[in-house]
Length: 432
Ligand code: FAD
Image (cartoon, rainbow, N blue to C red):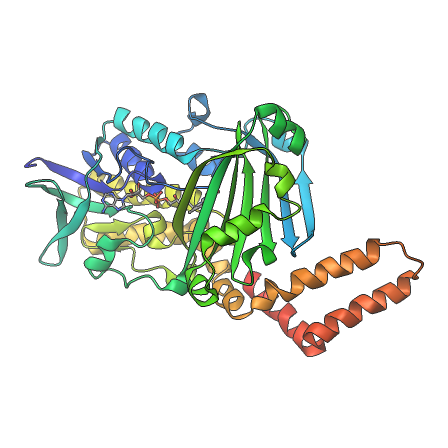
């Protein structure tokens, strides 16, 4: 490959496709390299698509993007072994176009997104792995691939190679990812007739429901579960910190199997046919785990840069936004005839800091550490909440004042008064 490019983008996931598309639209000559057989073939996502991020890149994406259902209802369940205490928010406002959130099947969406990038002029090569960055005099000048004679040169390289970027680690741009900064998520897709899904979730033809789950569903580990409705299938998954899996000695498969037998979940997937199983890492170290994201001739976008908002379960939108901002930086520099030096690429970090990406991650910067060190939020409190709800709801001749006293007593017996105050403070610090 003797041809030279303005920019090489590594990866054809959300970040890579957003970057490649934006660069090509900005008039740059782009090579995109993807190790999977097709874009999306290696990608795992639940998956909720946040329209806002893709809309900023392809405003008319709704015309032909493969979208499953638009979400009209959000449920949040805090679970113990037999129950959940939850909130449901459903609004007819979410049923009016343009819709804000959709379920998608990643492999279909990534292929569509990459087709858009190729139509804009990107050259995408699949089944090719970038094995190294070419670095000369401290500057990234291209990549080496696993193809014979596969060195390609470019003025800049965008690393959009996903969580645990081997290329960034190898080049010394970031340290090895720590097990306490990454979650391992497993998911299954369960197929059911469309009418069955609509009846079970009380939704119409194109409407969807998302259920986010916390509490004992993660078996005492720091983690969450999720269930999303697609057109003719249900995505069900759970993810916990890798360090917790190691400590707890429970496998992700066991956790997902246990989840499927929960009395609140089993009826929702009853009679379904499971056709797809996948496991993937999610960077959940948050703001404090974000590495250096630019240097001489290189930038990092998406999961490779730890851009995931774990508490709101947002990842793809941060990936698309960071990919877009990295690309916009290069387009602007090229228009101003400025080199892709580290000093000039600092503009990318400025754009990130000004965006919701860094603002949100900064807001929750203490969350990973606080939740990691305080497992009572995943064990004791779900139990206490469930027992409190049951005490209040059960009609058994006990007066309400006595019931309230019982509930207070159970909280204090489990955590002590100081413990409760301390936990409330910790929770507030985590989300403030
Ligand atoms: P990826 O999508 O992982 O893409 C990276 C690409 O780079 C891959 O295609 C890979 O094959 C390629 N690649 C890697 N190394 C090389 C190499 N050396 N050479 C060539 N190619 C390479 N986010 C949401 O917004 N909503 C959700 O509902 C949601 N649910 C999730 C559920 C699960 C189970 C998981 C695991 C994640 C979920 N996320 C969700 C997070 C979201 O999937 C990621 O944040 C997003 O995919 C990141 O995009 P990316 O482009 O950075 O990385």
